[in-house]
Every structure is written in structure tokens, then in C-alpha cells.
Amino acid sequence: MDPDEVYRSLAAALRRANDATAKNERDIAGLHALVDQLVYLLSRRGELAPGHKKALERIREQAARDVRPKVRLRMYVDKYQVPGGDIDCEARLPLCHGRCCAFSFELTTQDLDEGKVRWEVLEPYLIRHEPDGYCTHIERGSLGCSIYHDRPAACRGFDCRGDARVWIDFENRIPAPMPDGLVRPRPGSLLG
Image 1 (cartoon, rainbow, N blue to C red):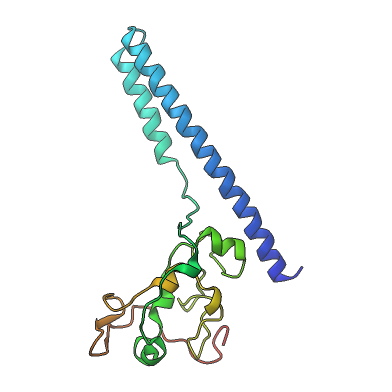
Image 2 (cartoon, rainbow, N blue to C red; image 1 turned 120 degrees about the horizontal axis):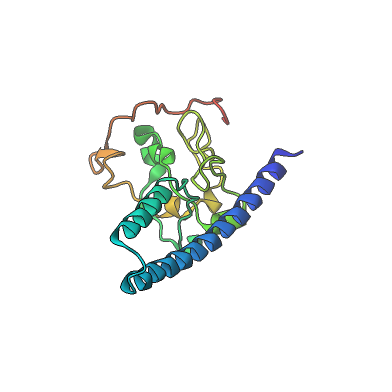
């Protein structure tokens, strides 16, 4: 089976699972409200002793500890309408080494619908990274973006000027130290 077809199938399945999870969360919230109201009414009528309420609270706390991580999606308006910064990234790449392309962020439903942006399979729907720490879409060697025209809203709107992870002094072109484990991709590495 074609890897892109597998990826699209997996993306569609996870999207359906995310939609089902959202519906379940709404249903559970309704049940919580109903149970809370029943406990209140039973307490007012003297049907529940104070110990019963404490036992119910312990059960609720245990259930909250057992909750699994959620699928995360960022909500944006049309990503093609997100204003971009006026930073000359190409001129600064030799200094910053595209470290913003190592940041992690949630994708939007628009990214999923378009099917061009890859995401972490084990952490849906975070932007996908390769073992070198960089986004899977960065072109190793040139540090260009292989999906530039379809890049996520977080990439389009990012402004590194005041970000201490990138610059000590943006105006004087003094980059921050490279984070541990992040090394500028070399031509030919991974996807290059």
C-alpha cells in the first residue's frame, strides 16, 4: 500500500475518532450535570449522608486521574488570511538555523482537511518532527519549507523578533544559543 494512502487513511480514521471523542465529552458533561443535580436533590431530601457525598467525590477524583491525553487541534480562521510577519527569514537562516521549524504546535482542522501537512501519529495533531528535531517539511540543507504555500497558520503568523528561543537581540542579529539536541540539518540528511 502506498505510504501516502496509508497516511491519509490513518488521518481520516483519527479525525473520525476525534469527532466521536468530542461528542462523548459533550455527553459526559451532560451526565456530570445530571448526577450533580441528583446528588444535590438527594442531599436536600436527607437521602444522602455527608459520608456518601465524600465517597462520590473520591470516585470522581479517581476518574479524573484516569483520563487519557486528548487529541489536540488549534482553532483558527482561514489560515490563508493569517497575516504574516515582515521578517526576511531567508537572510537570517544562516544565523538562526530555522529553529522555529523545531517548535511544536497544534494543527487546525483546515490543515487536516487539506491533507498536506504531516502530524505526529502518536500525538495527533501536533506538527510532525523528524529525529533531528526539525519539522518533517523542512528541506534539509536549504532550510526551505516543502509545503510553504500550504504551511499551517502557526507558521504563517509566527514572529520571532521577541522570541528568546530564537534571538538574544533581533535587531543586532545575535541568535540565542542552539537548544540541546538541535543541530542545523546537513544537506542529504533525512529528507535532503
